[in-house]
Length: 128
Image (cartoon, rainbow, N blue to C red):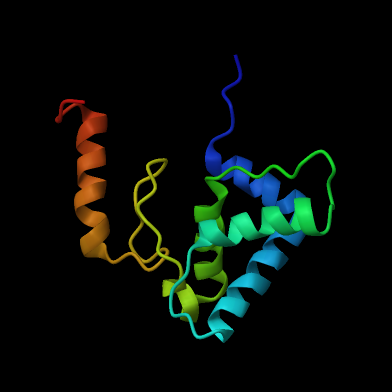
């Protein structure tokens, strides 16, 4: 049995196949910044994209589908693409992978304990 691709692989495939979603995400994030917001929700932006695509523009009569978990990946892509605006979207530690110091604005102090706990679980040093 071939294992299903993980969320990061599925996101990368979706993102590559739908570059217009990233373009719209960036456009809407910039509108929020231009409106004076210092922080905003990537999830809210994804809902606007769905609304615009399905209701306003009727781009896809079958209904536009995008995994809810992709909002966090778009927020992280935003932070990588625009590091000076990385804090605009709040991101949390991903359950699918350990936090990486220096990536997505995560400091070593934030990554250290979570990474150590995850390694201890993998080694069987912690119950779980």
